[in-house]
Length: 332
Image 1 (tube, helix red, strand yellow):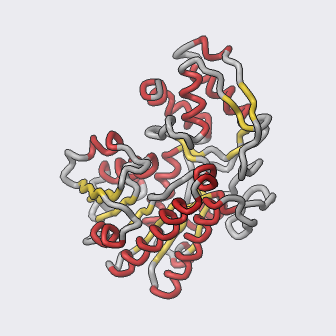
Image 2 (cartoon, one colour; image 1 turned 180 degrees about the horizontal axis):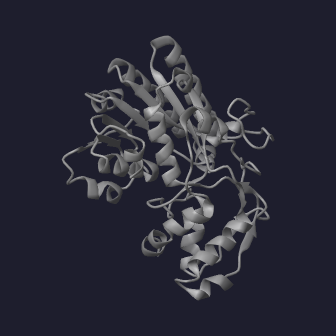
């Protein structure tokens, strides 16, 4: 098990906000398997009951239904907690364009509430989900943590503000913080049915149902697709970091390779073919480019390797292979 290999103690009490969501539930699962006590805070705005149902029988798991926009809920969740893995947020660039006020309430006001609650509870370390959208209009590839551009969406603004607040709280209140800039995470429990679904579960579901996926643009846009187990590894390494130089900063969480949407479709067809040979012949549609989209995304993971010992095990091919049984059994 990853956490055992990293010598992560089972004695810690850890709060996972957004723990009923895609990334949060995978973190809860890994921590519980390691014997940690886990508190999950979620309001089910995007999280799902079924994601945490298997954990409810575990005596080390505590669920609190609450909202990070309510400071009282945040402070209740922080009681007797050692570390926070803050995953709760409203993701999606299009969602933020459609409703920037709600995105700001959750991602900025909610984030600030969690920082205040963490400060009041004297939490040891606050690790939070940042975003590759922070790189904005920067055309530099690969993306290096210290070189960002101008945000291109309300969502990107909110995630950049998170980093600014975390930095201020580190300097002003002495809270240890680490931000993890996620790059296009995929894997089990990712919701394919949301209006703002990520492309991998969305395309996979469409192919399984013999529907033609629609690519925004000509398919040349590329992303650094990152398997969920790599994300779990980075969160654990952030928990374990014991060098002051590794703290109070941000890291890219990615594999360090980019794949175009056209290449992604071909990989999905290839790995779904053993389940259903009809899929390989499904045509693809092409639509207009999506407002606020960045053409290409590729992460440098040198900083994470050097300061946290990050060594991602899953590229997109091995990640898709690992997830394919779950996709086939759950996305029909």
